[in-house]
Image 1 (cartoon, one colour):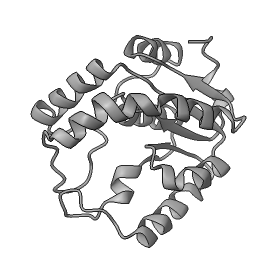
Image 2 (cartoon, helix red, strand yellow):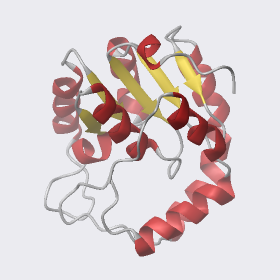
Image 3 (cartoon, helix red, strand yellow):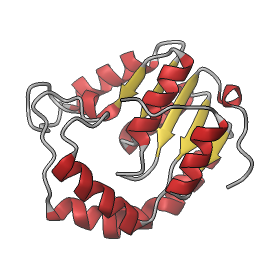
Length: 182
């Protein structure tokens, strides 16, 4: 990890990207709390309310996404690559999290089995459950996409903080004096 810039260097609209189970939702909530801006969770926009993870029709998600990023100040977490270009056009800074596949898998199992009230899963009736598709995604697909994500986000020219581990994420929390929301 390079030196951590001041949080203000990322501007008023910050994207938090990275693999599943890397701490995006918790970091977004901590940043929003520290900055006094809204935290936007793309999983909540992309799925129908009062369902267990049923996707929105694409046009509904696009409209919700456009409305969410129209504001002058926000922290938005999630990837949803189909809407990434639109989000990057409004963003003023990026934080790209990273974690090893085994750490991500451990976090996935822990949060699925034991953390019923985690921060990013504010979808009413949305229930996380262990499934082999997600295990495959974490262990095989996600690591393959890391360099693509680094290249894509770096190419924006926006101020960016790239972290590769949970230890680096802890250093970021300390440097910016962030506290983990409860």
